[in-house]
Structure formats: structure tokens, C-alpha cells
Length: 365
Image 1: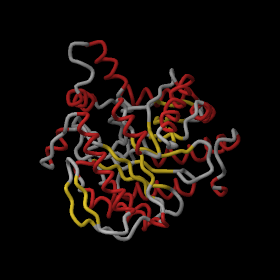
Image 2: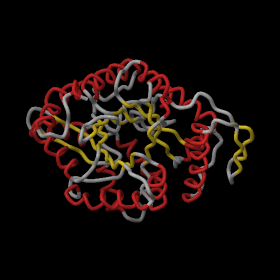
Image 3: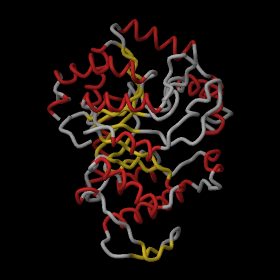
Image 4: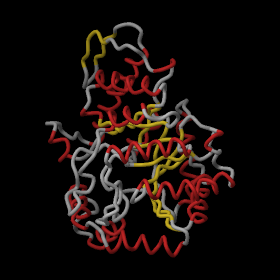
């Protein structure tokens, strides 16, 4: 994230099998270590700003066990940071599953490996089926953020305190905490959050450097008001915050080819078993609203959030320019097959973004 690019670009969810595409097509992302390593190096060479993983512990069943094969994100980040030179790489961490003193040390280790390129995406968690694997309980919504606030407070103090310290809170009672070394270069890892509820947004504004919020193609032109409101809330709290969103890309030489491939992957080869399982565990939308459930079911076929950019290189570049014009600092996106599709994106879309003035050439970062 430490670049001059007006619109930061990130690759999302490559640590998970199938990425965010709930499809059975054979070319879907496998997420092997070799694939992740190659993708990270390609992205680093291309000047991509960050890699953002999903914190996932078990899959969503269906024919593909969607997102069933995943890498733990902090160790994944460490391996990729050691193999790259410039790109920021995040760990996505469920606060209830990592003790804050251990977590603080892990994050500092990643930060030193990369000389300051590690980022922390902190999430309170919601998936009871995953938490049960750890014998952990999903707290009520408001309490999740109360707990995570204490968790992050302990970590930040471990990063900054030169003396041993005690911490006495509602959830943590710690004595004689000591943590060395401190983060690389006298700074600290960038902190990201994507809380969508009023409580989650308040937590992000109080703590995050980068806040992810939703957008759609239909609302993108009006998103400037939302972005400005988030920044205004942060400034009233005495902070500056970057505002980001998410999306998915299907890019082909022509719009017709891109739309044809999207239909093939997202309509003809959907892993409906995984989609229906996600609907059950998320309890969204309510079972007594069949029309809304069917809309949600169709919308989820190729993404879990954000919007799809489907078209030619000119189309995708134009949509990303709209994201920038709306005031977003950046966007994290995914592909169906990350390696093949990113290489086409690099060759065709990135030069267009440079000509539009929202990206610097990779060698000018």
C-alpha cells in the first residue's frame, strides 16, 4: 500500500481453492503453494500493491467443497513476503482464535521478514462451524467488537511499549507482558477492517488504516458520498483512513467473449450445493422470503461480495476508473483462474490504467 498509485490494486482470496468463484469449471483456482508463489511474484513484478487473503478454516461443501483447501494466512504471508520485493501482503486473522501476545509476535516476525510490508486484516469472525473446531464461541455481535478492541489494544501496546506491562480488561488479564523486537523501522503494520454494521464501521474508523466497504456497479457513481462520509467520520475522530472496495474480473479481448465465459462459469457450471450451504449457515436472506433467497442465490454464483467487471480491457479499465473517480483509494479483486487471467490483465488493463493517470508504471513505484 506504500505506493504513489492513485488507485491501489490488490488480489483477493488467492489463498483459497476456487478463490471466490463458486463454480465447477475445471480451470478454477487450485490454490497450491506453487500457484500462490508464482502469482505473488508476477503481481510484485507488475506493481500490484497488495495481496489480501481470506481467513477460512473449512470449506462450504458442494461438489467442489468451495474454499475447502486453504493456507493459514500469516504463515502464507511470511512465505510470500520472503519471496517478493515490494508488494504488501496481509494476514487475515480471527481475533478470538489467536492469543494477542502470540499474534503480536507473529505479526512482527512477518514485518521483519518483509522489512515493513506485512499488513493485518483483523476480523471478529462469524462462522460457528469454524469456531467449533477450536472449541471457541461466536459472541453476540456487539461483544465481538468489544473483544476485538481489547485484543488489538494489547497488540498495539506490545508493539510500542519498551517496558513490561500489565493489561486488565474485560476479556484479557495479562501480567508482565514483554514483546521484542518491535515492528520494522519504528513503524507498525498497516491495519485493515471491513466491518459493515454500524458497530463494525465504528470499530474500523477508530482502528483501521484501510477500511473496506461494499459497492455495486449500479451504486458506484453515487458511492462518492459514502466514501466522503467515512473519511469525515474518521477525521472527527482525529484520524485519516483509506477507503477500499472489492470486485471480480472476467476480462477477454471482446465484451462478447467475456460475457460468454461468465455465463459458462457462473450460470452453466455453478456449484449450487456450495451456494445453498452458504445460505443455510449465513441465514441470509430469511427463509420466508423465497424471491429474495433466489436473488441472493444467483448473485453469489461468482462472488461473495463486491461486483463483477465483465468485458474487454477497455471496459474493465473504464470501470476501475469509475472506482477511482468515486473516491476509493483502491480495490481488491479476484479471478476464476488467477494466474492465466492476471497475466492478461497485466498485459492489457494495467497499461490502460497508466494512460488514464490512475496508475504509475511498475518501475516507477
